[in-house]
Amino acid sequence: MPRTKTEVIASRLAEMTGLPESFPDFLSFGELYEGPFHFAPGEQMWGSGQKEGYVWFVQAGYGFDKIDLEDGTTMLNGMIEPGLFVCDEKNLIWGSLTASSAKMSTHTTAYRLSTKEWRNFIYSHAHFRSYLYRINAHFLQMRKLRLMKLKHQDKKTYWEETKARFPGIELYCTQTEIASYFGVSKSTMHRIMK
Amino acid sequence: MLLFCPQIYYIHATRRFILTQQPVHTSEILTILKELLHPDDRFLFTNTSEQLVFEKFSFSKGTIHSNFNELNNRITIVKKGVVGVSHRMHALVNWSHFYTAGDLVFNLEIHEDLNRMETKWHVLEDTVMYSIDTNVPDAHPLKKLMVAFKLQRSLLCSYQYQHYIKEHGLDRHEYSVKWIREHSKIAAALPRKELANFLGISNSSLKSFLKEALADA
Image (tube, rainbow over all chains, first blue to last red; front, side):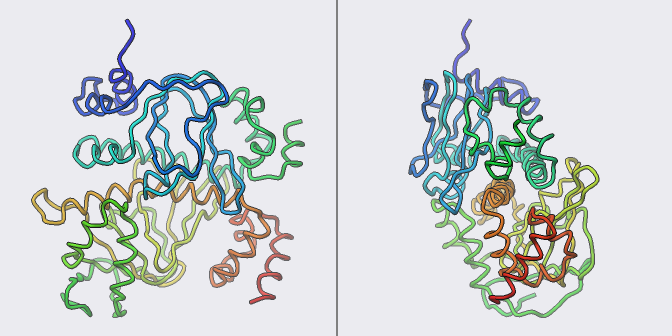
């Protein structure tokens, strides 16, 4: 039997926290989400410079998000995959215009919650808030590792790891975009990918 | 103990730390705290900032900390000094960033249970921090403000690493020269190899970037 939007989101939160899917905060959080929204390959889930921001939940589909850099270029940030909560962090934290974009590479089904509603929910649900902090603590460790890999991991090894984690990355992202993920020039990336 | 400011209370943290008598630049700290908040929440600060209780922490140059439980559940700002943050990946230990005056510090990056990368704080200069305890009872008049601070702190802690990742997407030459100019004291204090690793450049590039940065200084 198809599961409702609320059940799908609550189930993912249960998976992430180890709590039961019926945890009341998970159900009320899932209920707030709008959708489903469907995206075809090549469509943007959100773009850069947008005022309205959302915390998206991806039920199905794959894509990539990119972040705007101070020099006007963009940098490949990571893959969007099923089960992920994803958003423009700058918009979420300070309500500023989005400084990233997300383009889907396959047919996608997603749900969204405005960052304002997200914040209101977090403020009024103390238990949910404490679980969010725990999830964020894990997320932070992943970011630390990503930074250290970007700076110090052998690029060839890192590329092999990345290909294994994001199969088909070279089909959906340009070599320039991939080079930005590794912090190397396009020509260096070309050599690494050979 | 009331120090330097008629409206804001400062408590010296006496355990472990040496006290100094630096004047408190209240407005600077308050501006940083206000800007930490989401714009929709800044009204909480306007009405309550006068009731904030600050604690002062002092750290001696040369000390290394692999846990900062004293700063758990706090919002902390560097008043003066430098703290470098190192991590281990395989056999390599390297810097990811340096906290200097005016920076918010995030001790969540040294998480007791999750610290597989052996993140450590290295106090590179005598450092003074001001800190607010965000753990207040539900009935406390600043409860909403403290909840807002805690949420921003949690989000910003991971976002700061996104910021460092983004910096590595920038042109290495331009970025390195700019960084050395803006942080000349830190650059001078670090061994060349560590500085090159931190900037993600070779030793020979560092040599020429240092020349360039110092030539215009």
